[in-house]
Amino acid sequence: MYHSKSILGATADFTTDMLQLSTSPFLTHPKRNTHKICFLIHSLYKQIMLKAMISTDKIKEDLRTRFIGRRLHVYDTVSSTNDVARALALEGAEEGTVIIAETQTKGRGRAGREWFSPRGGLWFSIILKPKIKAREVSRITLTVGVAVTAALNRQFNLNAEVKWPNDVLVNGRKVCGVLTESVTCDETVKMVVVGIGLNANITLEEFSRSLRGSATTLKEELKKEVSLESLLCEIFYRIESEYVVFLTEGFAQVLSEWKALAAFIGKHVEVTVVGRKFRGMAEDVDEYGSLIVRLSDGSVKRVVAGDVKVRIV
Ligand code: BT5
Image (cartoon, rainbow, N blue to C red; front, side):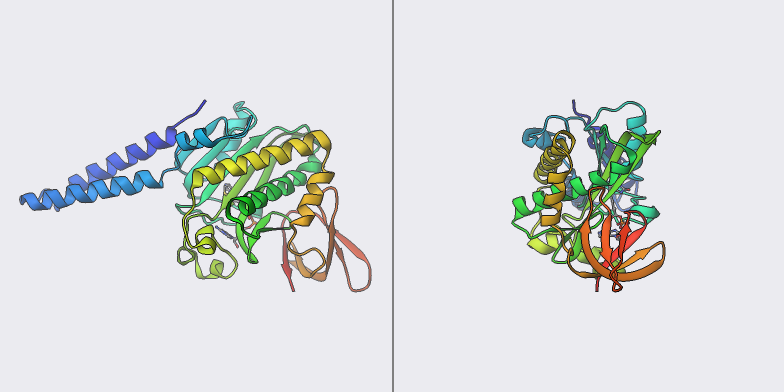
């Protein structure tokens, strides 16, 4: 079943804009030509707006999954798709329900960091209800990282890599971030919301100066725009496949796929945990998704994903 709230929302927004425009002094100019020009501007604006919308119909045509994306809520603007997903999940939304927004006003990363979410990107959250323990939640982040990376490499022939704990990189720059949030009870997971932010049809000039050095976009890497709908379908398909493997066969296979795509295993890294830094060799990622770092004195530190930053030095 598909919901098209956003399409209606966008149409409503557009109508409002038109009404606002048509009450402007410019539009009420007596000369006919002015009216014609305004009409043309409106038509053009309408075409641009409709082109920019993510089409639920196109997604429906391409979808190859059993449950991820079968229920879809597409919005024009929300604060954060993770918040909408969480609210829907608490109201009983089914596993696999996806919430997509064209833009987010309060997109966030881990530890409340800001996530830049302009039009042209893919900002979406998936509701999952895995029967796993709370300590396994970081496995979901790694599973989704593998799936998004594989989708990018397959669709665009890129050399995307995963970076612990929640990034996907292209040419060493962040193209995607994953934010996994869960509701647990007595160490058992009740539901997980996986938020995925993927810089698709955005130019780097749109980013702040500070982000320009570390981020990239598909448009920048491929020198063209991509179909958001077919990319979404590929990602849904990959996430569902990896997720089912994780739940039915165990995490080992997904973890070995993750390691094969990992950007910095075997490299010297600087790790910042809640503001405190240390350096060492990123040796491995264990079965619970913790990073194993060997320090210069030979001892080993196990770093749990959380408010952690890692950079290659
Ligand atoms: C993440 O956090 O990378 C997780 C991002 C998840 C975003 C999605 S969008 C849909 C859903 N709804 C949400 O509200 N969130 C999810 P973290 O590892 O903490 O990285 C955050 C850092 O990435 C920021 O502090 C910036 O330095 C950087 N950043 C912000 N926006 C970015 C962007 N669009 N592309 C690349 N880097 C960005």
